Length: 105
Image (cartoon, rainbow, N blue to C red; front, side, top):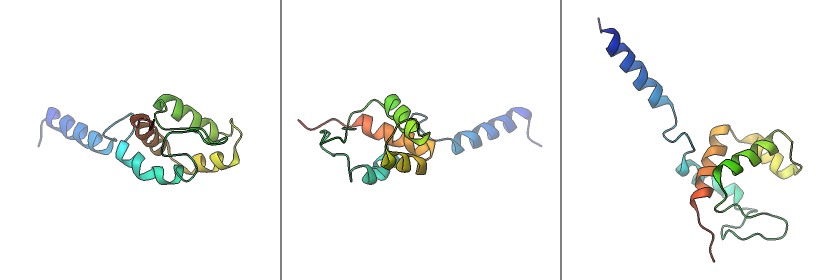
């Protein structure tokens, strides 16, 4: 029978394996999910019309905005619908991805 330390180590390993590698958001997942975003938001990072730029947006602010849309605290039916479909992990992933990008000059 394993010792208590070995059991704790095995449990810790299991928990870490089930936790996202980057608590701030998985950039690769964010890149994968971003195709829906770029149907409206410019991939160049420029604001066009009333659609704001999201390239280079700070992750904390991105998450806060998406959560506000998800909770219907911000008014935009399209963004409310998009945010409602996303999990917190997916929002964090998108935030990490968009924060990592630099706008084109």
